[in-house]
Image 1 (tube, one colour):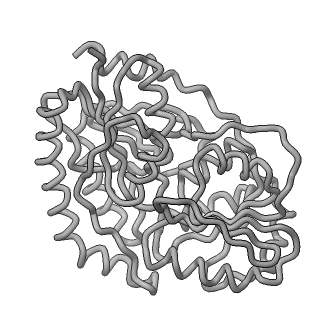
Image 2 (image 1 turned 30 degrees about the horizontal axis):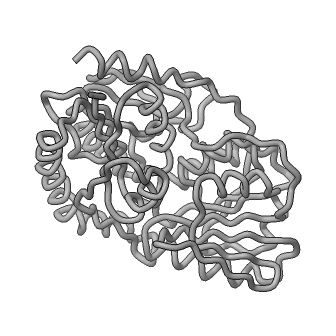
Length: 352
């Protein structure tokens, strides 16, 4: 019987789910049997990508954003009792899953309660340090206290000076082993003619996802050239709508999205870390709009701009004219090291 590995990404936008896709593929190639666990859109997306794998539902963290990004920290503080309750519930459910499905090991992408003291458990994150303004020291310490309950921490980035996460994913010392596994992307660069002037990618917690969608649909009405607009809403069936020069999808499968990104001259999106990894892998030109109040995305967008790679602006300041700034930037040009999944898996899961 193949050793079963529980793979559990956080449902916070689609980034955590999409970056586990190459890990699930690698587990299968290395002879393991992945069991998928998440909730909401993240779980729906992974079910579509891996219809033949067992998928299980975990409690929702009920992550949402205020309409005004300035109140984000207050909203998170108010929601913290629900968050800790969900973490406690998912830890209990994880124990049940382990017994029922004969789980051999765990890979959790930012699900703080999905681990077990007697099983090899991995935590994937690009944020060992959690930026939150003047409270960064507190949020980082709290997050690190959860990470230390796992056996290893895998950071999807490079260890050296040339990296994507900056101070988010780099720390001088830590209680458990940290392994830099290289940026994770489900996509491959394809040499293909450019067919789309602009590709818009939206995802993330509500209501900010909807607020950005409405703003962009209005602002881009007069934008010249062919536009593909992906709303980032995972539903039972794919829907496609055409309005003038714009084609609107509710979601795209990985294969179609890979093809569409490769065929697009410019990508407009949030500055989420998974999106940055994907666009860097495909060496694309990009314009970023950080989620209001999310310090991590603001930091990443500002860092890329300072490096001369991609421009950004605040959501409230965006107009279609700002896309002209892209010509002044080099684009996301990175060479990714190849991840040795066999070594990663076997060192942790085979010897237990």
